[in-house]
Amino acid sequence: MMNRTFIEDKLKEHGYKLTNQRKAIIDVLVEHQGHFLSAEEIYSKSKDKYAQTNFSTIYRNLEILVNTHIIHKTQIKDGTFSYELVCSEAHHHHLICKGCGKTENIDFCPIEDLQKKLGSKNFTLTDHKFELYGYCQKCQEDQ
Amino acid sequence: MMNRTFIEDKLKEHGYKLTNQRKAIIDVLVEHQGHFLSAEEIYSKSKDKYAQTNFSTIYRNLEILVNTHIIHKTQIKDGTFSYELVCSEAHHHHLICKGCGKTENIDFCPIEDLQKKLGSKNFTLTDHKFELYGYCQKCQEDQ
DNA sequence: CTTCGTGCAAAAAATTTGCATCCGT
DNA sequence: ACGGATGCAAATTTTTTGCACGAAG
Image (cartoon, rainbow over all chains, first blue to last red; front, side):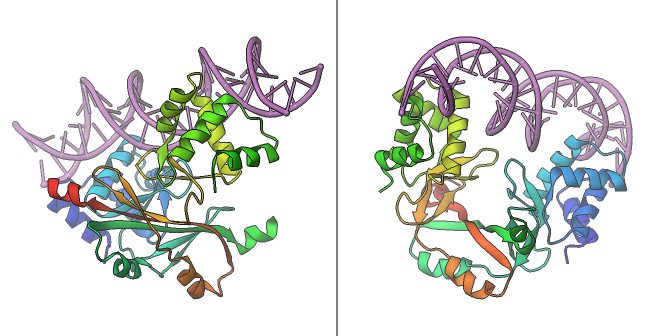
């Protein structure tokens, strides 16, 4: 699930063409399932697969992938966005180390509990963000 | 709690001077407790109080206020940061309407539940973000 | 009077856009 | 062949920085 072929088909359904640049980007995202990548990282890793790839192409495609709900966009480090495949595994959230920036997945999700409490509110939830910041063992020792 | 005087004293403790620009910024933040403001909004509202205020001054002071834990910085809309007084009321999170951008406070916080489950992990939590996106009643009707 | 803060203008960093050309289908 | 996709360079947007001057304690 959420492998190359699945994503490529999904793009085709939406009328997008399969260019080499696009395939490279998808490959990179699939190979890093469950981890956030910055546009910068996606750019350089895509170039390794298909040298002729431009930064604007990366951004344009990331936007398409967000709009077709193939990837998720969030902001983990200050000032840049990070991207990750949707449902790459089960739905999960992240522990984010403020020292080294490493992220770790956690499968706890508070959203059902919340929905119980929210019940009556006239608000349709579509999306949520739950991110945990702190220091991993190594970074804490270094302090 | 978290009124002008409290904040000003806290800044003085840290050796910061009380300039008119700084007072204007603090006033703006206090008057909008419980709501996120962008740097842009803080800038223009501060100028209403004290005309001689510059954008770099805003950013420099917001950074100081973040470092002294007087305000919180997060990213609600794409591409810009939003700021809000810490503990302006009790600790809370937000419902954020993707239509009109309005935010609503909710007092549910999943962090204790999480800590139970996390227990054994070698990770020291310092901070967390829990943000809920969707559409408020009005924006949903408009669709 | 000393140190910290500010304004200004310019730089940086991240992302977006216009346009001519190229490539998938 | 057509329409979407790309590369390039330039523009935008948001935030940061250097430096000389001004104001707070």
